[in-house]
Image (tube, rainbow, N blue to C red; front, side):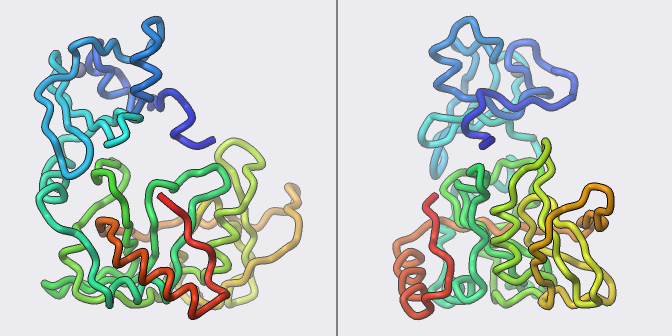
Length: 277
Ligand SMILES: [Zn+2]
């Protein structure tokens, strides 16, 4: 189920604020909350104050506890924002993050990982790659994410696309057909949507949910292949436990990017269809 469809997402953590439910709620459907006064979602009348308009969307604070909340430009989802994310969100809002043509072409050549069957990821266009930054740092497991919303997701480490000097293929990014297969995998039980792959050493491994990278000593990630066999629950290959640190470089959507994508598509009919935001 897509996160956009459910009314709220809650973590198994303690609520720090009785009114806004900071600490336990990470996002909720703002329109649903407005229309349903009996819902157990945060009671919203006059609760969110100090509106701060951003590049897109608005940052608020809870009147009671001061926690920050981000409402997207469509006023659909209200999202809890950790204090640690305020700095990158502020820099994102003030900086032009449209990618250069050369960077867009590099991403198109690698191929983006589309949203999954359930629509997760539909608000970002993500391409796994290697990024060298202007100050010389190398990120072997990077994802350039073209998105119009603020970089608030707490489980991601964000940097700005303006820091990018060079984009190239990552030695640890899975081939496009394997990534596509992981986005198409059915969820056979809650949180388990497996894709079996054959690794370069002949062993098998299960990738769970959308998977962009695989980093195992002695394995050539680019030689990974999708296996079409059915999963036997009595004899399952091990599930790959991702240990690599992934850094997300957030970029703004632009006309240039769309034009360049179309151009790349026309040049290579095998490229996957591009998904909207
Ligand atoms: Zn609060």
